Amino acid sequence: HVQLVESGGGSVPAGGSLRLSCVASGYRVATGCMGWFRQAPGQEREWVAAIERDDSTRYPESVEGRVTISKDNAENTLYLQLINLKPEDSGIYYCVADPPKYVRCGTTPADFTYWGQGTQVTVS
Image 1 (spheres, rainbow, N blue to C red):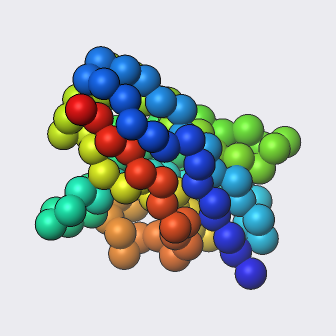
Image 2 (image 1 turned 120 degrees about the vertical axis):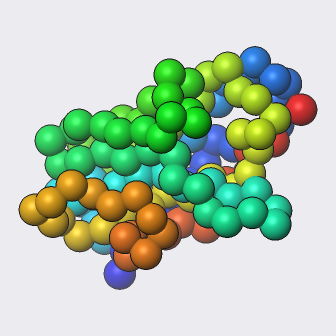
């Protein structure tokens, strides 16, 4: 079965950087839609980034220029580079994946079948 395991979260001051990792098993990172969501306490899940089979990437305006999603197919690992972090970036960050599709990847929680347990990011 599919497992997504995130790591790399932590506490950083405003303006700091973090690199989150997501190691996938039972799922080939190269084949489908993958992305990241985040959720702060009392808030709904927010889409952060998506990457397609062809490595094209998409971001919401709220994080554009401050995040970079990438993948290492050989290591079967997804990454999220976060820079110039702000307190409002705090939350649990989830790695997500969906089987291959022939349209653009979705950007809502319902568009993704597989979810990791999350890794906490706290920006003071």
